[in-house]
Image (cartoon, rainbow over all chains, first blue to last red; front, top):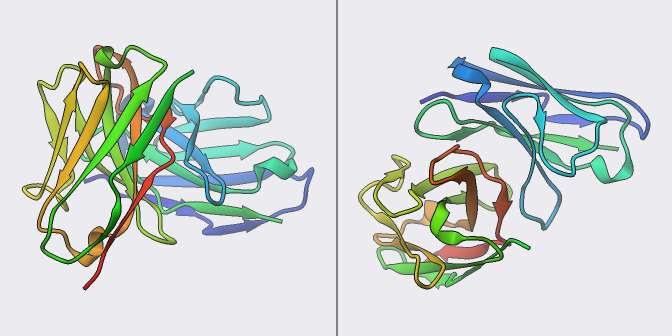
Length: 107
Length: 122
């Protein structure tokens, strides 16, 4: 099983600041098979990024993904109020599909 | 628009069974693989199971293998999760989620339902 580890667990930032979230895999994730999701309280997760760096439909350009192998990053260039949420990475390189533990982005 | 609506959750005793349903609309259900993903209260996401678009293959997480069964009825646009021998650690919100691959699997999730809560307690 590929174990996904996200850091930090909580990130405190101010609106307008840049947020950088990290996701590390215990084994190499092949073919950039890495996705990011956003979840707000009481809501279902929402797909943000797939293929490590491709934005899903409707996702603003201030949200970007990068990385390869075992190290991946989600960057939000200028935090807006609607960006405060929990973010999860997920690998789809191997069974079972696994998620990281999440990073909470708070004000 | 794509809609996924789960139902069937509730409070059950350990060792009992429960069947969840997920009604799909707004897309050609026959062409898409479907997943169940769960989230224990206050915890992160855990993938549970997947079924191919035509029902020909299924995979399960080790934590539910042998106890849970995923199925689908393409004539009813409905996904199911049959859960048996339920344990306290199965307590979670269960989401159904669509795989974006058309007649294939991409193994990520582009649309999610609102979830249904299963609570296993004596």
